[in-house]
Image 1: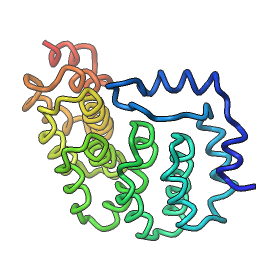
Image 2 (image 1 turned 180 degrees about the vertical axis):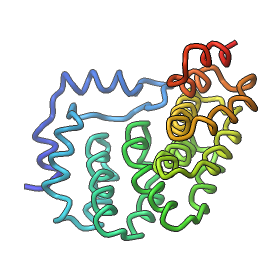
Image 3 (image 1 turned 90 degrees about the horizontal axis):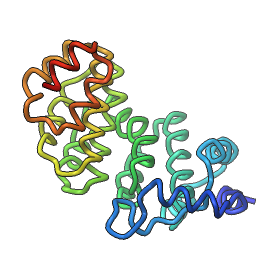
Image 4 (image 1 turned 90 degrees about the vertical axis):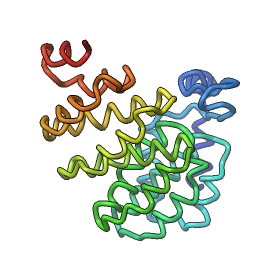
Length: 227
């Protein structure tokens, strides 16, 4: 038995149908064509714990190439566990190599801060993040922004603010949500950082980005910035 076999054994067709709707896999939607087994994240995490110490990079790559969303998620969470354990930069390279397979918001959000964000904190080399942000590829752009969650929690805000300015005119709602979410996290760490950004940009921010960013402010502050 291996990780993939265990995941396949957990297949739940009814749950898979629900997840295909939830993750917008229909024609023209952001997750178009993705396939699901119908496995819940806690089940996947249990398999990660069982196998991450006994898997090689070729096996991880095979999982990342799977047509099934949960198998790719399992591979990515295995990479998170391995990177936390040994700081092997080959994991960062493998992650970047497989951006095409990190193709929905959950895959990004559960892994980008812990791999790309952690790598940036250790090196302060922004080359990877700049390349992702400049790619014109939705999921790469989201990785760049969401990676900053780890950075913001460490009290560093400059790169996030630069990225949020860059994406003020982005057309996709998923980027508005990502930038607003991480701005909100920055505000929880240092409210002055968030208020400074809002004072400068609130009038032109996409409404979704603005709403997400101000969620933890006082009712009076929220009313002020929404108006």
